[in-house]
Image 1 (cartoon, one colour):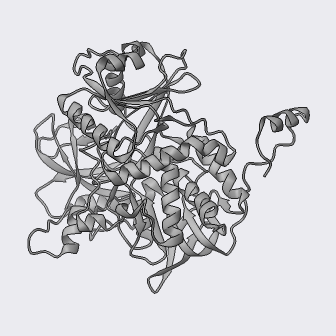
Image 2: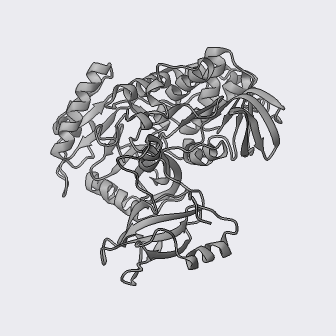
Image 3: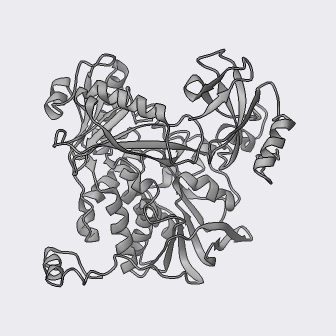
Length: 414
Length: 109
């Protein structure tokens, strides 16, 4: 792999940019791999990358039914934060956030990580108490956050309206080291690094069944034929339940559409991420100047990757209340992704009833921020059978009643 | 946008008039049941990719609960029916069979 650098740009410019090589290879599948990962999104590719980098396992294939990073990795609102309430969550999200800080150098690929800060607005007394609690919990967990006053919120976000018609801003949970990153670049950067280690990233390769023998996985059947493996990692997000069904077990997840939209590009007006969970909308400004806007999930199970009109209305209404100046912005694009939501709004990372199959799913509405941490922990789990980062997130926690309850406690969106 | 017809009051409306209430025909397991049954009842939903049966409430209308048969991939609604039943009416099952030959959902097909 030729390294990207300022020198490389100059060198290629001198050759009329004819010398750039493809970022990753597109090989035909081999008959057998040590590890197969289903799903070439951020989490799947990060898993493959850390399997190679941390454990030297490079005989790996990452199978993707569509195109690389074309699922939720390319459909989210790119927010990175780690201000969670529960210890296991804070640990894995903070690991991820810290890995984002060095990801561009690590991958030699500019993922445009921008630690611009994330504010979660407190707009009810309950939220004020909740976020103060989270700030204290974060202090104990070693995650730098603070509860700030409305005046400080206004200082950080001058375009905000503190005296909203329904919910005035009473404060906010501020994580100065949170931010955003270029979501596609995260997938592309990992893919390039994986390909460089000799791993196979096989796009348009849909797994149609999982083959097992005596309760142990032996391989998968795909539209490109049978591929054998010793270990199988399922990282299929919204389709996790569908893929698990192929292996004969069920997951405590439900799939729903979550949508986002972006406005026309405007001059820089907001240099941080603002989440308003009570009125239910969140917004940041991309480097192109578009306001990137996210809201709530559809209320019913679906696999449409589309979203619905009334949720756009709800989200936009929330943002117009919070930022009156966006009222006259035109929206450019809208899209949806299928998220797999668990009962406690925490992910599932662990072993499964089938020997050799590992699962990483249930990231629900907030998986992008966790990509490097999730890959780091899941790779360790797949390589060694155990990872301190992921042990609390096992599938058995529902059976045993050990929830990592982020749905009501941490004021997380959705 | 979903268009549903409430089988209780007969009114047809779009989805904001209704509230989705999750999977239908769930068999409840309580005290005395095995841990597997209780775990399955609480957490393990069908999450079907395709034909799905679910509960809806006519929130901004008559307020009654009812069931709907719907495809989660295309959002096509096959029909709605009374919630006072343990399984979908034959007529709805036939309608689904005509459009999705070979479908199955839990013990129904």
